Length: 226
Image (cartoon, rainbow, N blue to C red):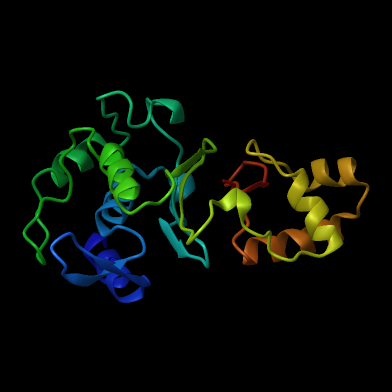
């Protein structure tokens, strides 16, 4: 799955023309492949494999201005603010991690992972080398999402917001990183549930929000965010 994801990335990512100090010029993927590899590998080995997540998959979505990688299950044994800061690794699936330290890619011969807590620092360094903003990490408890942004001349806060309808704009602005349910939004905005669900579908289709939830869990929505 990791090799297939990398093959897809090489075929799909846009490229930029980069001139090196020695005068050579080459094409470089918009998103660094080494960062993408680390994020997909982390998603595959740290995803939740409990019964509730049996029908859920690791997701990779390439949108107009962002790349999203998400997996079932939140962080395990670490918090978002400690990612890349502490030289520790915490494995939800310890046996899978142990196996993947020794399994090698049939394509490249490289080990799947190192398990040395170097993944997030590698992502951070690679994004900085590509002049991209830092990754945005979202832990909802039942899903862990990483968003990579790309912009040409201005940071995301300075780019024009995609055109939204009046209802979509109100719903989007009401969403928070903690997540809101349809009932929460209906009570706050005074809109009917069908209108809110329609707006949420449109916002999700544009990649502006995430839908979170699972078996026995309330469905909530939050901005993919910057």
